[in-house]
Amino acid sequence: MQAYPTRRPPALIRAIGYLGGQRRSAVIAYSALLVATLAQLAVPILVQNIIDTITQAGTRPLADAERLIFSATGLILLFALLRGGFSFLQSFMSETTSQGLAFDLRNAIFAKIQRLSFSYYDQNQTGQLMIRATDDVERLRTFIAQGLVLATSSLLLLGGALLVLALTNLQLTLVVLPLLPVALLLFMLFGALSQPLFMTLQARLSQLNNILQENLAGLKVVKAFARETYEEQRFDVAATDLMEQQLKVSRVFSFLFPVVFLVAQLGQAAILYFGGVQILEGTLDLGAYQQFSLYLIYIFFPLGQLGFIISLMAQAAASAKRIFEVLDAESEIRDRPDALPLPPMTGKVEFRNVTFRYLGGGEPVLRGVSFTIEPGQTVALLGATGSGKTSIINLLPRFYDPVEGAVLIDDHDLRSVTIDSLRSQIGIVLQETNLFSGTIRDNIAFGRPDATDTEIEEAARAAAAHDFITAFPEGYATRVGERGVTLSGGQKQRVAIARALLLNPRLLILDDSTSSVDLQTEAQIQRALDSLLRGRTSFVIAQRLTTVRNADLILVLDKGDVVARGTHAELMEHSPIYAEIYSSQLVDSEKH
Image 1 (cartoon, rainbow, N blue to C red):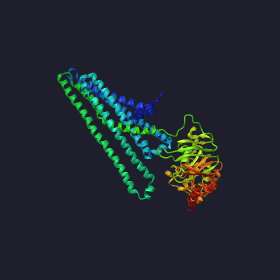
Image 2: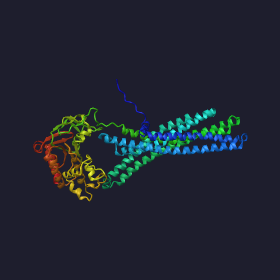
Image 3: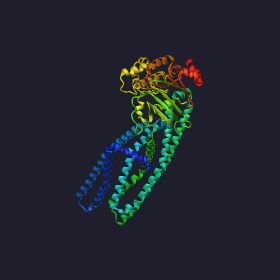
Image 4: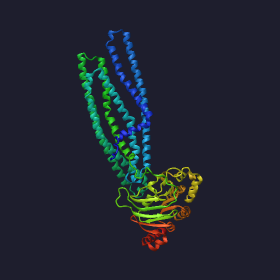
């Protein structure tokens, strides 16, 4: 039997479902709202009693009339105080509930982003993801704190008022009822019209935020190429698009609010007419009419709030849809249900007829690649840009999965083991060094927060980083700043190498990890690595002669194919393409 996917409820309903995590504060908030509404509904009855007492003063002793008026006035004051107190409680607890919901959603988004595969980030911009965790969540939170409360309050007030009116004057109530379907139709119509507008608004806000984020991250490049004017124009275009969309939304709601108030005014006019007729006919006294008028306000007041509720709801619905686009995203790289932890690896690596292409890409970047690396060997990957070197090292920690074939470590297909157990045994130093704001110690211990100071220092010494670290006044407690801006390129790379070595990995990946250091520093790092790499399987992308010459195996790649393999001596003798790369690329880089 064919299985059909379960249809999910609308995104806004799913977001409201997160209130389950704030059950206590939500129950208090809406219980307080119910009490405040009941107190409000009781006031018109007391007002009617006062008016009836005044109009019938000649039929009862003056002292009794005064006592009734005093009692009714006292009760009105009591209900006002009751309503005020519970309204405060409701407002505070609604805010607490909404903040808790926003907290849960932001944590859920962040946790999801941490687990999504790299292919997702290849297709989604950083600025867009940031907006969903900040502005979209805030719009949803505002609806929970205000819009949902107003909608609930309006329904309670409307339902209670209609019930009392129907019990006291069914004829006048029937005059009001036709307005409710009109109001409901307006609610649905403007909700359907406004949600796509808010979706576009959020998308344009994301684009603006993305430009801002890119420029802040690449400010040095912008200044270096004197592109400030161009970037200002690009930002101006995005800001103009955002403003135009905001004005389009404003036009819709500028039309909505007068229409809502027109409906309310028509209802009031109808009640004035038919109520006046009943008074003239003697079927309705002044007190009952005043009571009816007050309850009528309780009916038309929610209708007057309809535009504001629709605005908040449409924004929240658009934002909720964008939030769940992230939360519902499927990670291509995830543990299989039957995945087992990878045992402590010895370091044997096999690529078995691996073909790989990036999602949305055209031609494969690796075609039928096969090779076997024995434990403890150092492998150098050579080739021009786009030859597939980085793709090979991206497959090892399972950042991506091959389209065809398999990658195996110790004869375990990587798709059959848990991701955490695999990556925890691999040390990686990428070409683009990323450090986190915090201390140097925190960055070295990033993969092992429980590491001792002695272990951290040993890793730093091995990476030739100890001397420059201790030269700082605060030593290992020196703060590196955002993305490590207070360190030079070479210093950042040595900290990154220390971070990888602290894991004591059986498999080490070095992606051109000495590209930003001078020859003297590289020699220091190389001497340390020579001893540390002994007994470990290592994959190295390098442009320096030292690494290539010392490698146990060199793989030469060209347009996704392994076109040559062997040691330096073997390839110099048998591979013209390696000899050409060696003489033109590696030797030239050494000379410089």
